[in-house]
Amino acid sequence: MNKLDIVKNKIITEKENAFNLLQTWRFKEKKIVFTNGCFDLVHRGHLDYLATAASMGNKLVIGLNTDASVQKLKGPDRPIIDEYSRAFLLASLGFVDMVIYFGEQTPYELINFVQPDILVKGSDYDAEDIVGYDIVKAKGGEIKTLDFLEGFSSTGIIKKIINSTNK
Image (cartoon, rainbow, N blue to C red; front, top):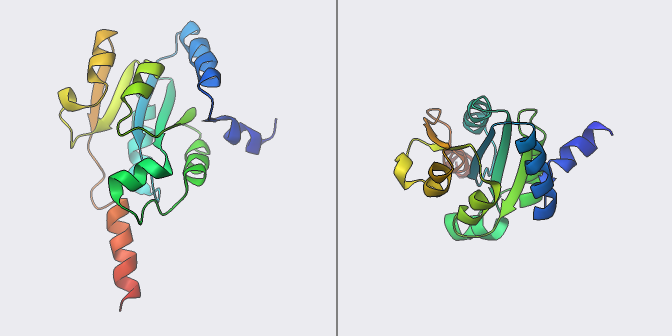
């Protein structure tokens, strides 16, 4: 299998394929870490966050908002990058093991499906308020929050681009 196929195979579009892989990891006693987001305009802050999350376990699963759900969250001008391109970029990172789309308002159903050992979100959330907290706690898992890298955000980058083109 070539490197491009390895990247493409990390992008899961059918839950059945994800289920089989998750079961294999559990059988091998791998610690599964889950996080989610839009990851529009992937930047250093995202990479720092994802690499740190990945180091908390053996397998990193990213729930990726679909284009339609990003639009509902961020407005009609977002996402900047389409969902497959965002998934492809994330899947190309060596420490990412699976990227799976979700189109709902929250990743609750996806978290219930994945059943991660560790749920990771930004520290702008209180652990108890993180979607999926109840699912992960019920199975004896952990909820972790990470500080964002100061000065890096997709919204900030977009504003900077717009301001520089308006000069």
